[in-house]
Length: 110
Length: 113
Image (cartoon, rainbow over all chains, first blue to last red; front, side, top):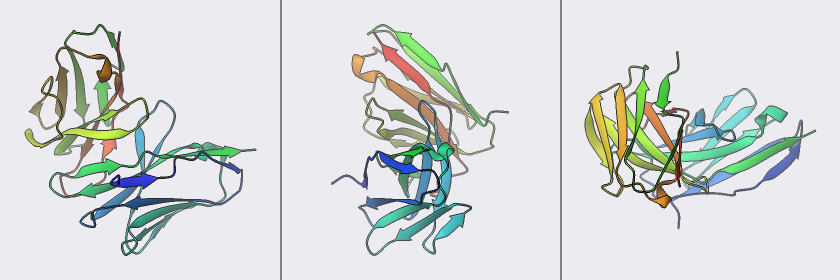
């Protein structure tokens, strides 16, 4: 089993839709989790850190469920500009090694 | 005012050659990383340095040798390049080693002919 698993998609949604991605992880020792966004032929950019209590940043909400070992990302009111690949990542201590999922591709359409 | 910058952005070279990629960060971070993203877009850590000291080495062939002259720079030298080395190499940095978000450079696209 991979350490971090994501549905590769693509998720094709109309503008204005709400879309949610899940990401499951193994190794419960992982303490910190992140969502990154990667546009085609660009670098990953930090979207948000994920906290146990859940956190929100504008149209984006991230949740962490340690019991079931998954994190989620909810995007409300999707914009065309949200089209990208969304990578979840977990950090394991001892050097802040980030382990990434393979990414979920989102396409927002008119 | 780029935070994490890499050079070159593109590198096309023949199999068997030796090449280097440079990375610099102006964020004042202590920790720097090299990642490889292969053709299937899977992003995997290769090395990490904290304050010029190697702390992560992820079973990378010893043809790859990182060097950190100071905490703002982390370079990657690759000897005897092979076809399988073709990938995008990303440098990243973070404030420290304590499970903090990492900030990525814009990548070096390496193509081996």
